[in-house]
Every structure is written in C-alpha cells, then in structure tokens.
Image (tube, rainbow, N blue to C red; front, side):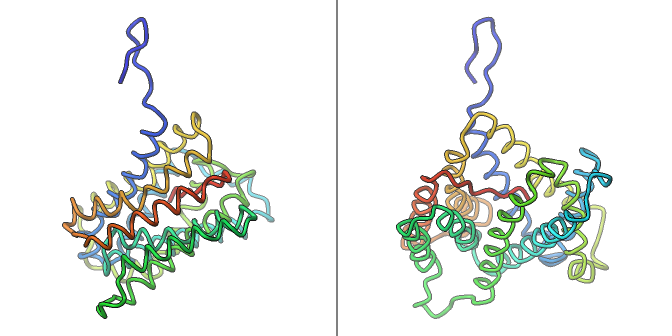
Length: 289
C-alpha cells in the first residue's frame, strides 16, 4: 500500500476489496470439497451455514422486536432460498468443475440484471453467457453430468431469487442485521437434508473446518463487499463481479487441479464479457451468503 504524507498508509483500493471478496467466496467453495467427501454437500451446507449463523448472531443480535408481521414471509423466503442455493451449488461442484458450476450459476443474476435494464438489447448478454456455458459443458462430447448441471442451474435460480428478495427487504433490514435473521433460517433449511447426511461423521476437525469455511463465506466476503461499496459505485462493483466465473475456474485449476480445455477457457471469457456488459445500466450482481 502507498503511504500518505505523514506516514499513514492509505486504504486498499475498492477494486482490490471486491476481488478479494470474490476470491474468498470461490476459495471457500474449492476448500469445501474435502468436507463434501466426508459429510456430503447437504451436510457441508448445513455445517457451514450453522457456523455462519452463529457468527452473525454474535456480531449483530437479531432484532426480533423490529420484525413486523408483514416482514416474516420475505425473511423466511430469503433464508430458505439461501439454504437451498448453498446446498445445490455444493451438490453441483461435487459433480462438475468449479469454474463450470460458477459460470452456470452466474446465468441467474445475469438474467436479472439484463431484464431490469428494460432493454431488449440487454438480453443479448444472457444469450452470450449461455453460449459460453455450452462451450464449458461441451454437450457434444456425450459425457456431460446432467445432475451437476441441473444443480448449478438450480443454484443460479436461487441466486437470482436471493437478489430480488434481498432488495425487497433491504429497506427494513440491512447488513449484518439482516444476515443475523436469515442465516439461522438458512441453516435450519439445510438441516432437513444435511443433518441426516452428516450424522455419525461429525468430528472436532470437521466442526473446525466448517467454522473456517464459514469465515471464508459469508463472513469475510460480506465485510469486504461493504468496505468496497463505500468507495465504488454499484455499477462498477457489478462489473467486477463478472470476474467471478474466471476466479472460480482459476481456483479450480490451482486448488482442485481441474484443467479446462481451450474451448472451455473461451466459454469462461464469454461469460465474463457478458457479465461485465450487463452492468452498463447500473444493475448490481451480488451475493453475501
């Protein structure tokens, strides 16, 4: 970091914080693989969400008295959506490469951003991203994992719903306050499938891993996003978020040794280009859970 006159260090540039948030999200996903092999994707989701819920409850006590009856359906829907999104994404990366999973999931928020632009031309970008996804999955090879793709599509639908629900209740509950309410609901949702899957396999080491993964996602990304958004426009932040499929593919290669073919690299670039272009109208693509 550069130094200000007088020896005081300047804060990290906001784009660094945004990229660090995405890196934390995808690193958390990549490092979840050993836990998935031990307690399954649903079990991993349940443990990670439970640890995250406990952390957010400690950071910001749930404002129970501020919850009006009209808020309950949206809060429950957001918590359930978060739980399902986490489970389906982990189920996807169990079956298909991380970069491919992220690219498919990215179609959800990308479509939301394009539709909100109120421009027919903006629909070009989800179509371009879809071409990229086809290059990534290479269905012509005949060995496509349909279950993995299906779970990634479901996670993308969950991400899109997450954005809509978050903005719906954003005026009432923001930041850690909202997460302290919705994360326990997400953990309870994941427990339905995750508790039976993980039961009998939980050890102190697995619990420690779950806490570490919860810090990588959602605690650290949320803090970094909040810091970045104080000094960067939502449109610029959304453009940076388009890098997430590329970051996922890179960590898939480095951490999980998932080597993409040349045509798959082209597919990832198409998804990144589409995501960046979709932000020109100022719509933000975001995920904090």
